[in-house]
Length: 493
Image (cartoon, rainbow, N blue to C red; front, side, top):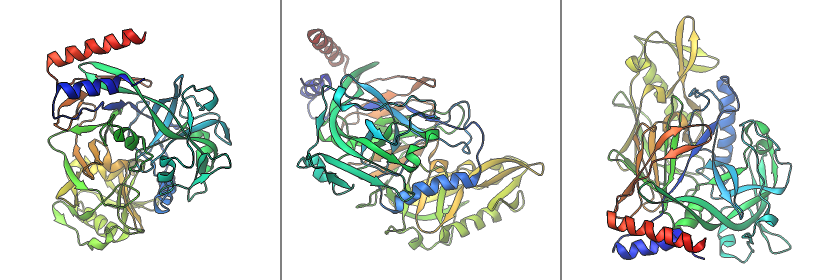
């Protein structure tokens, strides 16, 4: 039976000529901190090094995603994990999955998983996918097209029973292996004013039968990984190939207060968004960073420091806690900041890190920083987006550099990405951003002609969010759609 969403897409297309109608899908995000006390900078760097080892080795896993504060804290020194909930199988079962903008595969732990965590310090119950109990599950054979595409980006294997399998190994020794299945993926499709239809579509995802390393640690254990990469196996690619959702996703990550934010399978529309082209033929979301300016003055940095190569370039990674600059850029960057505040702040080295003792607001004395990308797109950073508050030192506030010095790849993590809308436009191969209050609602495009709905948080709790949805369609069409939907549901019942 065709899904109700597909039926309404066809009908709406007939009623509204020359437009492409998508069912944009909203996934409420949660961020949980396994620890309720600050951690040291070296621990954050160690966590990020694990992620960066995966980046440099071309792994399918980059991590990351959003910067949401929970349990009343927005301190970036709390160790966080970013995840959303998805429903798979028939009857549907809910899984908590880490959001990964660098991988192409959605995978969850199988009921037969060996060496998988049995509990989670995140306060979420762990679930396991049981293929035998789902009435809609289907195998993925080695001869299937989707398995062939997986060979290009993953360690895909073929078992003796012609089962398409996978094995991912990370630089830190952690990894997972299992096999692919096809089953029903459930999501909320926005169809009209204050109307969310429960929709579904078959997708291919991984069933993990073995995990090792960090994936087995209970302090940050979840049920799996939700890949948002550009490959054929990503859910974004699978759904957009069928015309169910547009090939674009967006997020807005709130960095203070109670936190919160929005992840939407669709394009957030905001007049201030600027775009920079994605570097082609890269496994991650690389952009061309051209220069850095401090207080409007360009720094003396050789552009080659940012040029994309096997071990260089600039990656947008919402899973990295801090930000990392290639050494050739880091030294002049810190020098310019220190020189700019020499009359108002005292530079000091604290536990090996460049820090400053400040007796007033950092906004009053620290300069704005501009990261200038290809396409004329600049990302302006306030002091709180390149500095971190570590507490009190000798009676003054201690602020330290959130940017860390590295060899090679420049990585922009949560410290930089928070409090901004980010749009990953895979059709036009570009990434856009603008400063935004992520506690507010956002407009999301659902058609190629830029009709849009309004989505946002009305209230935030640890377990749910109310979503306000508004589709700008003529009232007569909307009324007809609602009547047809109710008629179809009545017939099904």
